[in-house]
Image (cartoon, rainbow, N blue to C red; front, side, top):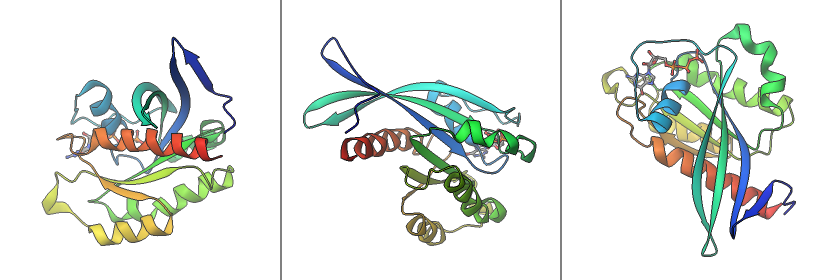
Length: 188
Ligand code: GTP
């Protein structure tokens, strides 16, 4: 382990990781994050301008020790006018959450492009998870679970389905992100 970002404070180990949240406009990146950090859900769509950064702490068990994982979560605007800012936003990311909307096929097809952008910025090996959001909209579903799992296999990551509206699975994806990012650092 490099240990560069590790701090031992009052007997507790703390680490800080940068996590980027990417995907097409309106898939619910901000909503999932809002639900996690403030338990609130807004129906109104307010496009993200550039990026929002939210800090969340997740406790991870490691060989009976508790590690405080500080996630600096960068919610990156999906709108094309912000593409020129991708380089600084993606720079130095330790983990990535790829989000699509299960009711819009184009957002699913574009997942590979979002991953390719990360590869372009040297992030091909970072821990990542694939998220299909808006599962509360059952009747509008276009992407079935096996399709998404197939893509997840291709991207070598796990697949989760969430609803920012009901909160389904929202907490577990950030826990998972903290765990896999930590594991990747311990291994390296
Ligand atoms: P950009 O900032 O443009 O990249 O969009 P975003 O991906 O951050 O989307 P945002 O969170 O702003 O959500 C877009 C719209 O989808 C809003 O109107 C939300 O209320 C709605 N939405 C987000 N998540 C869900 C969900 O799980 N279920 C339902 N029904 N609507 C959702």
